[in-house]
Image 1: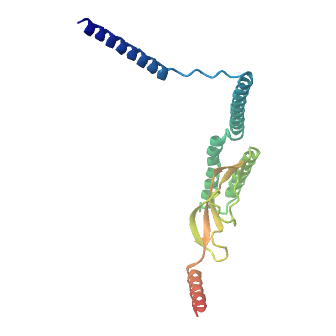
Image 2: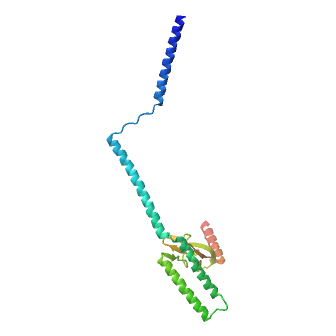
Image 3: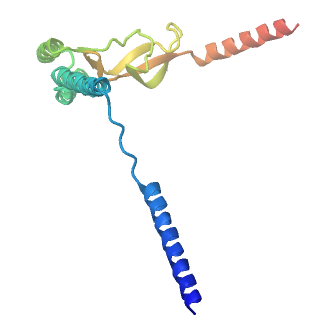
Length: 210
């Protein structure tokens, strides 16, 4: 009986020791590694890196602010300028309407009214020019999708295909930015010349084959 008790006691102590060892191993595995202490030179380098990054970020912010400020000064009135173009459009429409009025045709009254409209129109264009807003060249220019918007095609064998022959609505630039495109009509070949060109191409192709 005593032997059995001694045996059980010994087994209990062994189990306790094993449990203690397992706990130690578990603690060692879960233990957060201690940070390596940096040398003075490494600390200085780390601080220099942080300072350089902070300076670069501040410089980027400064550049963004400068760009936003410049854009605000240059294009702050962009929307207002675009709306103001309606006045020029209305003057052009009024001029066209008066010129087509049968009752006023060839009268002194019409001439005087048109002269006043032209003066106002020129004054407005001068004011816009002083604010870096200028009309886009269109007539006899090649169609440029960045500046012009083609509304229709007109048959004209005297012009190269894609040449602007009529301006429906004047376009404007504000410095380097498009305020609005010009609405234009562009030239195309007549049907007769299209057919002749097609026949010429077919003849040339047949000659090349032979």
